[in-house]
Length: 312
Image (cartoon, rainbow, N blue to C red):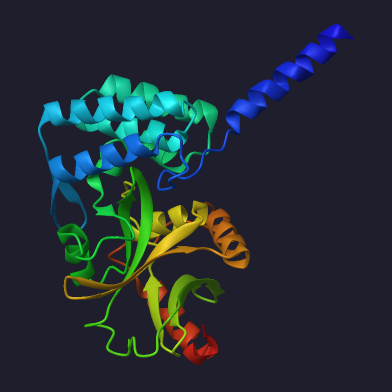
């Protein structure tokens, strides 16, 4: 009997450690918040970006990457099992060219959570999958759009990957100069919605910005990807969204940010995103150069659904 009891206690102890839930890294309630902010500010000062059509190149000094690891280590001492912090350290080790140490941390993350999104995808796409310090910084206080985000915005990429206090996050960026129907007159609140629809020609993901002054804007996210996974491919952005609890809703005009809200997904949207994620795992991503199927799906969707059905 003692043996059974001890086994149960041991299981509960292990299970508890695996499920330890810290506040998000952006939260002032996180036990390592001061170190997280210190690391984020250090990264913003010392890591610069040059972007092209599908990726960003980082410019930094190796000694700065090593210093960044030291700051993150101090944060980890206060929250040892925080997987977001461990992944941040893994990312810093990669840019410091400490590949063996980075891989050791990545495997540790997967040992705790075998379904950790970034750690899992990185394993099969070690060269193509960009890590957190290759993502432009973001938070709710930013007033001028980072150059890397602006470059992808000009390529009409509305859903973007950003770095929110050391962790990857999604920003949904609507440029008002392009979407001329956007008006902030009498605007107070906004929300975001996504539809994942199985048409006779295949799946299509459409998403909607809705303001409480009646403005509605629509976008499409092609679930496409090259052979090797990249963080900015539509398929992988959608897969990431399926695991998220929030995104940033952003409206810009040129380089100026007019609206910048951390939007927490209501439960019905979470459920929809989780279901989409499971279905995405079962299908082959579209080839970026062959989107005929998506165009047919988009036409079918346009004929069947009226954008006016979406309201704040």
